[in-house]
Image 1 (cartoon, rainbow, N blue to C red):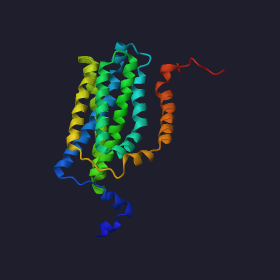
Image 2: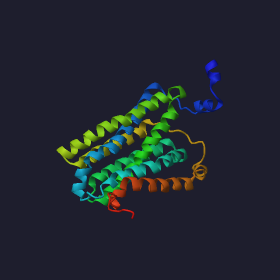
Image 3: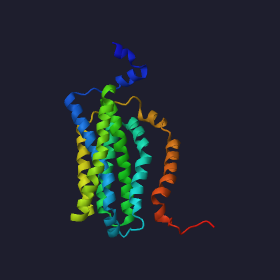
Image 4: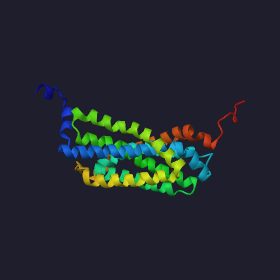
Length: 253
């Protein structure tokens, strides 16, 4: 009684929004979320060790940093938009879309024949990855009680570290023993399988408003302003040296 009274009105509202799941289904959903986040961060963090090999094959030694810049830029700028889209079209539909986009982008990365297409597909992978990262935490909030939310989100967060460890070793193994393309061809079906499992296991949360009403609530201009700001911040930092030599060739006199 005392514990319930200590909850604020806002906390009670959040508590009522929880979609209670049977224990076995909760474990399945949570394991699926952890798996998709793990795949996402293996994809994001493994590529760095394979970049020299990719640059040599695609003849992109001077611009290969754009592979990371494109992914980071797309990931960062689209994360918030994914959350709003999930409010409009539902968590399940949008989450599956993010996973499917990552799967398709990884497949296309492995098929790339030139640097430009590779950078574009890495950007698409970043868009999908941003959705996975954001929506996994949102879905946890939907299915886990307030008391346990921090614990479950912490476990999901640990997949970030695990993916950062596995990714470089996996990419290096493919780059040295087979082909860097195999790295993406492995991740693509893994993500596709995760999308299929998500379709069957992730519960559908009913929308509280029509999608037409929800679309009107999106701050499109604010999202665009954030996108432009991040572009102007990240491109000089991450890709500036690919465009202009910053190592002493330009001096103010």
